[in-house]
Length: 138
Image (cartoon, rainbow, N blue to C red; front, side, top):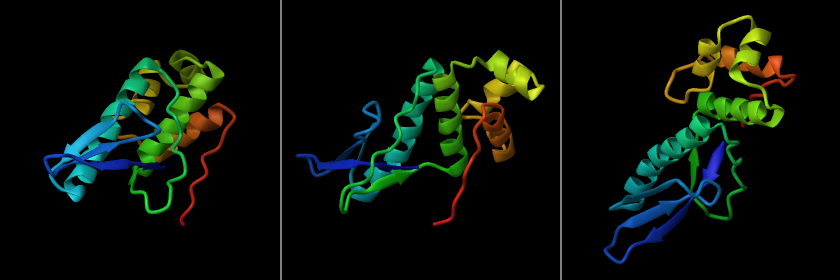
């Protein structure tokens, strides 16, 4: 999942980074490289609000020519897909736990972006929702 960013040079010489698809994510830096490094943290922090509120995360739009991107780690991208599917199907953690034969607490860990989760667990949860996780190397 590669989210395009908008880089704006500030009057003071630094840079502000915003995400067209995730308007809550805003960051700054003295240099373009620093601003992009901070942008990743801002994106993850903004995604946390979506997860807490159980709102679907907007998927990234295609980047425009020469537009910079911030890429999510594969495990976090998979969690976004899981959250979006849970919301779309209106499945509560307790129901998913029942389908997986586990506890609601374990399901909550699957959708906690600060908790390290094995990709197999996310794949099993998606399977329980009638979906499959498709990873590709490009």
